[in-house]
Length: 342
Ligand SMILES: [Zn+2]
Ligand SMILES: [Zn+2]
Image (tube, rainbow, N blue to C red):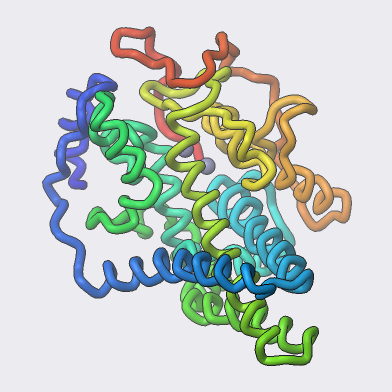
């Protein structure tokens, strides 16, 4: 969105109205839409095929174990690598660890890492107000708008034609980080590896092509689909449902949603994250389980991670938690405002 249009749109935003349509928005090209559709739909078709196969003993313990391993590795690649390390710089990693995390995250079929980082930084810069690439409040706060917004925040935004400028939001990676640029460009090859490796492992362990095929479906496609939807749920559900115990910037409606804590490796403590974006730990206190933070702690003990931003005292303060829905209303005292800090 052009700066002038963005400024005008933000100035008039009251927290409830649909976002003004950006002037720069047009129709997305057919090729990007087709590619995105294939990436999104193929794993879902595999899920159906996998369930159908499992009905007739088409799933083995090997498939489940491989699926778990690939889910954990690629999931932590996204949460620890893409998100906490590369987007928010919550810690400094040894160069080889940086590459390992970037490669693991790239195998999650969530786009190349530089675009991922740029989109997510833009989300923090414009959370739940015009300019946010995937806010569930895009179509307003009436029921119909909320449902449409939920679909947009979860999946629909992938098909929108409002590109996020990597040059603007991720210049550090684009211009000064050749290793990350190489990993980012290798995204298609890493997607292929993400499916071929489970196939090869399943074939090798079972000794049959059929074993390779079921591993391909479960530890490849189904695992990709599950992780995609868990990640997208942080964008959609974790801005609509749950508790908001922490103070955030104006219009920010991020929530803590405990049922997703384990599957999302701690990312669903999203209100805590939005209140202090560069903290390495998103959960607060010992009861909010955060496996990504535990891994960063392990890296720190091994001296693979340094300069870790651990939980600082809650400088933004607390306010009462309200379960089940967002609490920000027009006219409510403004929360902390100011420039976004990644
Ligand atoms: Zn968010
Ligand atoms: Zn973030």
